[in-house]
Amino acid sequence: MILPNKYIKNGESLMGVSSLLLHLIKGEASVDKLWLEYRTYCTNEKIQYKVSFDNFLLAIDLLFIIGAITEVRKGIIGREIN
Image (cartoon, rainbow, N blue to C red):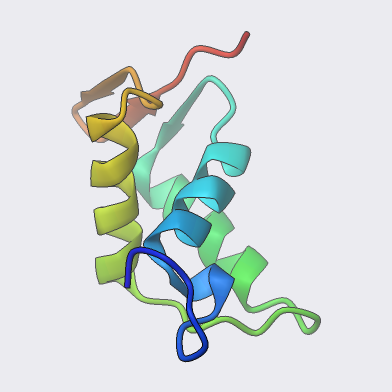
């Protein structure tokens, strides 16, 4: 579930979801807006990944634990862009 393997696609693993979320977060974003952007990106006719809110939240937690997301306050996720 964390890493992709022959049963779990890259976009459905936590590392894949986390990397996509890191790409979608530019500065600050609300959780709702980020969820809509993620869901729209994943239901693109070229990609077609399974969209799970649970994996979305676990990926946000993973990004916070490793320090990629610097702040989470009142539904707003912040990231410093270098």
